[in-house]
Length: 184
Image 1 (cartoon, helix red, strand yellow):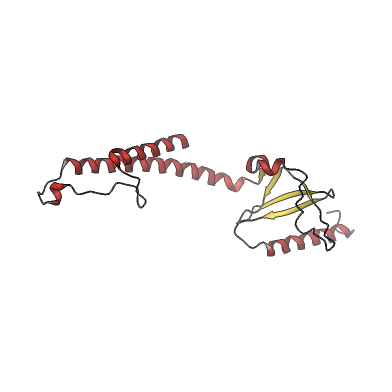
Image 2 (tube, helix red, strand yellow; image 1 turned 60 degrees about the vertical axis):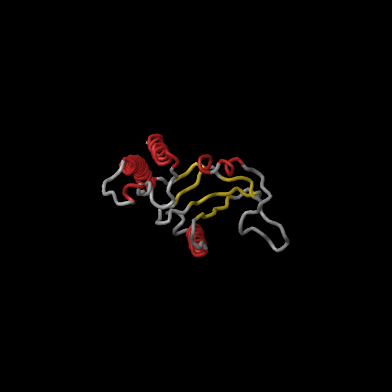
């Protein structure tokens, strides 16, 4: 679908730029130009005007066909997104997947004495949390051998989410220690 959409865009560009035209920055079609005959009031349309109208129609058709294909692909992807609950790090960030033994510290592990837990590697699967904003949960392996969960969320303040995650972690730990609830 996308290859065909690109072909329609190339056709739009070819039509629009033929004869020295430029791609308009506002709107997608050639401006209607007056010819010398119509400017001087001869009344009738000219071959230049008809050619410009035909070019506009062809350019508009090519652009609309490309848009229809892009929109079809968008709708297909948009339908699949809600069901997507894990991402492969190698597909979305190959650099993070292959990096190891960083000097960078795990967030929240810096101590007063200047020591910190370093990031050894990133776990290859990223969980997509099925809420409205669809944040990502990534796990870092620390130099101390422990796993550290980090929440990634775009365009939002994460402090409240971090506190809720800490609360859930505390509740889970308390429930696990209580012999009445640790079997459930």
